[in-house]
Length: 179
Image (cartoon, rainbow, N blue to C red; front, side):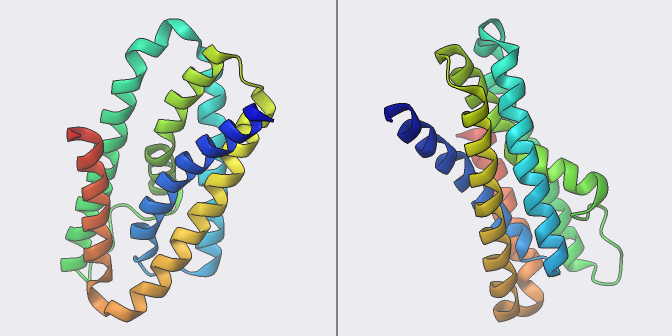
């Protein structure tokens, strides 16, 4: 029971990261099917990444933690800057959309922390199926919640929503890189 509670807390923490970043992405004016797909992809990456982390093992754990933060922060900064630029260039097509490669980059950026968590949990001998299932499900649900709240809030602030969403992503990327 104690392991289940610990894993649920860990899943919530990793899912809150997905919620926070999805809140910014949701302000880009997404449709309900896009929100659904983004949540599924984020959930899937939050299953794959900790699984890879758990399998990778102890010998990489001392190096990957900081690298994951820097890569994740860099990807969030890139996505955020692209959103800010796109907000000023209303007529042009955005370079990075939450589809295809853009969605994969977004999902990777919010799931890199779960890779590091998977390393730690693998070292501690956590139950693999229960661990990755909890993390994936919680991240997917919280990503959906963040995307929906962001999409609803986008209508309140109008044309500045993509600018604000980009600034939120830049803030989280900067936090990962510099704090």
